[in-house]
Image (cartoon, rainbow, N blue to C red; front, side, top):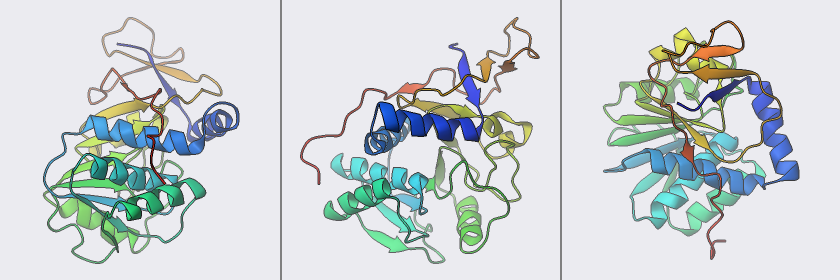
Length: 246
């Protein structure tokens, strides 16, 4: 197993900022994040992508574009009209491709075979409010396969704590493993965790995740891997935006 980096939310935010400033555009990183999710899942049936207003939602819009270009049926359910510059770009692209998009209402996930959770990112803290709470509860009561992007919405990225959070079959975290994702509490919310390497340059090293049977001491900057963590990342670090998009 490759020793994976485990970092704080603050370090992730700074690493993302530094990478965009010096190396790769935010728009390209968002496309790579979506491509990492796309490659992690066996897509089938009716796909519903639940999006919020930040960059986590932008990953969902970008994923919808990739799915549509690969002839997979999907629709977007949005819980916010707010968009960052990059997420707005992919929202417009999804619209131009004819991806159905609707505001969240009760029953939005009733017929889904796969639900993609792009509601809230790693910076979330506190308690879910409406309509986020109802959406998360509806996702959790669904019989669909659930895929969370970056983190299970409602979970604290540093501690793994959550009063209510999305329960997923698969969580695809972007860039690096955040501390909260391998906390004891996180195992209650995810069955499988995989990293999508999108080419973010780490601002500073913190801890390393090592195999559970490793001889490396766990109290010297090393963390033993939980059994739900996939040891090999999905490498999309060299993906570029396709030609001919808006």
